[in-house]
Image (tube, rainbow, N blue to C red; front, side, top):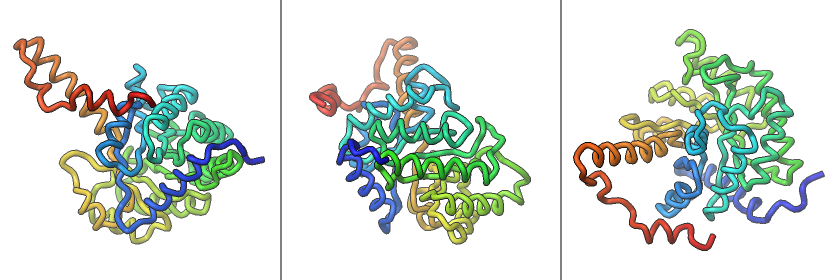
Length: 283
């Protein structure tokens, strides 16, 4: 039976996230890794937030690639959701287990934490190999069923395929393999297709024209702009670990400057204490 105690906010945020995904402009999703980063991202004007498994794991002292367990990931999602008033979609990596029931348990955990979307990858482990399309389709169906049973049938399911990211198979065969997976994942109930590692605009345009699912691209520094990705047909654009990397790099640079020269120039231009504290005070 559906969970009748699910907060109304979850239903509202799920509807908002779906509306944003269906809008004419691409859905831009900066990726948060803790409550503070989520609050800053929302304050900057983001309409929705995605989590980054890498950033969440690093903030907990673990490596990416399911370095955290399901409970720790869900608790991080709960803190992020509580810190903002916009929809949050959770990176649940490979579902924290290979079976459909593992994925279902993960979906139940993040829905309970307040997430209204998930990102589920088809890698069996970082670097591959990948689940077969049939195996991943069963996992996606389990995600959809679990969300409905948890009282959130409108959970936005972003099916990530790592064909390009991990260079699976001969390069010439990858476009067809991605399209084959897109068709299977659409039939299994996915709402969109995430293809990290594909930033060749011509290849991206071919995929978006043929895919039965809207395509999510992962932007990278010095890569194609939002305008260029959108022109190639990308309907959702996220940043992966890039924001977390930038934040940790700022800490590294400022510390190195302090130790080397005794100066603090790298700290210039930071958000002031009162602004940051005010984003979270009283929540």
